[in-house]
Image: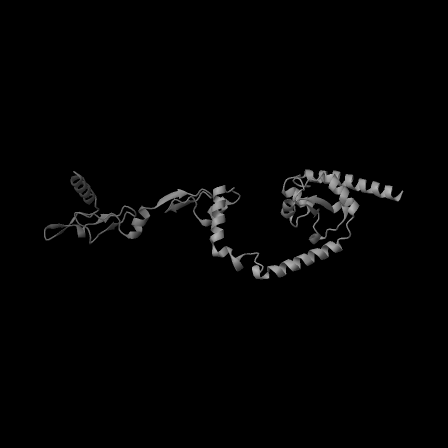
Length: 255
């Protein structure tokens, strides 16, 4: 049954040729028959034409055009030839579509593992490479020395004010309000590296985690970045309380 269908299709296609079937020595010759290309519509002959093989396209280029599938780019709306399952016409559209998109936790985990294994993210290829473990002792010594110099140049700390400042905090971190039982550090609202001093209005107590997260940011920048503008009002209340208690203690000592 399939053979009869194929024979019928072949005969119909041959009959639709532009010119009659060629003959040679009184016999039908498909090699001299002119066929019509399904892509460009031009007439052509083929040396490989036979009863079991009817040519449909005049060249490989026309065949390639026939199997192309066209799709609209999901980013720019441009129509492009789709060879794979991609949604975008170019890498630029792909990156533009990903810009600002929130990555899933699985995607972030995959990226993290890939970067950890990639040689491009190790050693001297890192943007913040500072020399590796061999230079760490020297870098730590220089960092401690510079911080000590900045702290000394910032001025003398008032122990009375620090005592009342800790009481104003009620033993809690200024930023996250967790108990300062294991570790507490004296936090400079304006860092010493950015010109801050050891002045009363520039000091609060914080836990190790919050102190590390703030890094070299100023107090205002950190409050805006984390979305906690109310910290400014909180700082005013703590400073007024600690500074007022300090003045009272100095007045009582003088009298």
